[in-house]
Length: 510
Picture 1 (cartoon, rainbow, N blue to C red):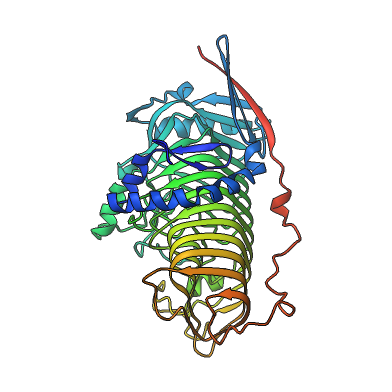
Picture 2: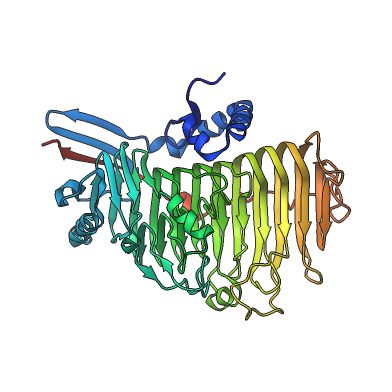
């Protein structure tokens, strides 16, 4: 039985998700249906959470001694200097704009970049702000009762150029609004807290998007460009205008213990989108989204091909996802720079359209290869596996029709799903088949009103073993002795060797 609050295991502790958050994300009927479904697999989520050894290391302690308040947390770097937002005139009343105060604090603290770095502490309160830019060797830390509240004054969101690997904005042909927390050409950046909140107040932007009133692309909540050594952890992100977390052209990235909540019908509210990035680790995250929970990208059509910056060496583990209209993990559709060596494991999906989806099209070019997914548990799905070679969205009409994507080496194993409408829909490209598909030890329980055709396959080739229901003829069963290519890699990637330090800070209560 559920208590008045629904507990989902997150990175550092049991995170209480009040029912009213789910009621905001779903209609009443959807809410109670999903709540019932969650209760059926909560034991699985508990096991996933208990496996989170690294997440447990980032548990924060808060101690009050006299007039001094101290807290500690785990981070890639500790800082030699610290200041509070209130030291720079910040007002946490939810009404006063703090954009200038936050940027002034960051600019002041940047002087310590070569002297141990600096931290900006955001205390309890509602801190209204527009976009601001971080600096290197810097930590932004949010108190558990701190809320960064995104401004609805569009003058507080500067417009910048489109990403070079996209050639244009995603919402409009012009530029894009700068993300709420932004940075470019940085190193050693930490955005963390004691599960403090960043609220994008996205309804303001969603209405403009649906009304066709935007001339620039909506902002994201967190975006870092051309940067390295990045940590985003122990935060709650609500109601992003569009994507939530977007590292792009960056490397050595840790996203850990992040809770992301958006209404399931909100437009393009992807959870975490590594884009032309190398050496990324996403773990212990809980996402309710209006789009893909994790979307792996690397540029769009001819612009992505010319830019040529792939996403590779990506780890996704211990992720829980609810997204009724999108995927748990999507590869593409903007994949023109290439996607390679993605390793996902210990994933839970609830009431989600598809488990793993590959999206591409003629004109994309690039590749998706060496993809490995294991130990995935799914409940109430439209598809478990989905591949689309006819994803129509293009940056413009100048794409090369001869630029065909290469999709090969796609490996799925050790999965269980129930209440599924169709096991798989795998659609390659005529004269450009998707090859090297391997599926092993997968049991899919079909819904009472499931499709008559359980597997739909065209222009694909591969092998299977121990899969129920029986796959299509283009994925023949090879027998247990012959199948080895589905094996998950045993070597470690560099990002797994990153060790967090125990950081302690003391703040005066005066």
